Image (cartoon, rainbow, N blue to C red; front, side, top):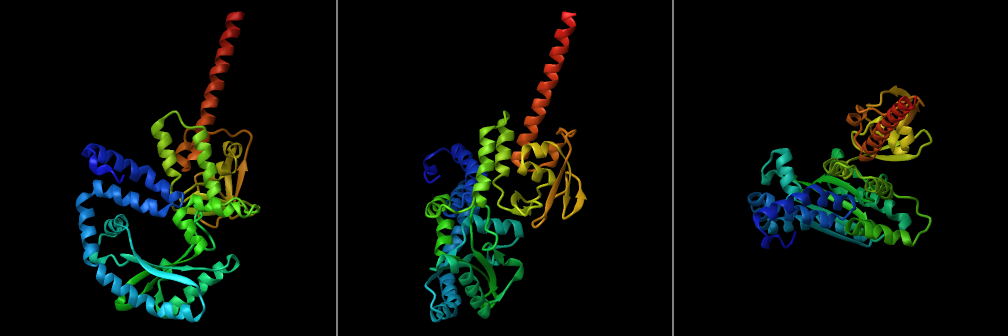
Length: 356
């Protein structure tokens, strides 16, 4: 992507489009945020040239003003953190051009109206057993100075993202009536955010008792898809892309085991997440002890019990119910197997007739 300038316009658009569709979401899902941001910005440089240049120009023009505001914002927080004896880093960073452009498009606002052109990041050097407590203590200090927006507080300490990302995000009303996003992390959490999977495995090597992380659960799902790809390349690509969703829900089995699914997943998706045999025999479910159909969309915190029957078989309609690539793949496999059995039965009947 960094060398696209030397290529033809046709190749630039082709490679940039592939990057936005597959590689940037994949980098995000693997926790490689720096790479993800650069890929998105580089792709936009070729697919949205005018908008890219305009936003880059405006960011350059407002850099001095942003720097002054950031210094004013962090000054009282920095003083209290030092008094409390925290070992920390605190700095402001600009949002990526692609991120700003997304906000302009989705919210229908002008550049001047995008309130979070930058974010404040606080990185704490805390012991492993004090990380969460220290992050919440810093949150308390920040909200003593600036009023928080409850709708824009994100607790990824209690429930880390599926790719292992942990942090506490809070948006507060700063000086001059401007909203400011503050990200609070420990050094370990920051290492995960910057280095993604590499940091995940490095930390795991030092602790053989670490349980399977949410990232490993997701990665095992991807492994299943790659081991039995659909013969239709476009279907396979779409299914793979669907597993790069960043928005997730957390649902539980009757025994309290956690399952991570993409938002808008159904009871049937949940059944297949347990086992393909459970999914193939699923006739319904109980969500929070209430009977629901296969197509019922799940929400975070739901407890789900799957109801099965040995007489049940997957049907073509199920492909319109499920969202996850794993469920779609297993349903297609079951349908193909059923067709193969029917063909074999027909062949056996035909042979028997000729023998008679």
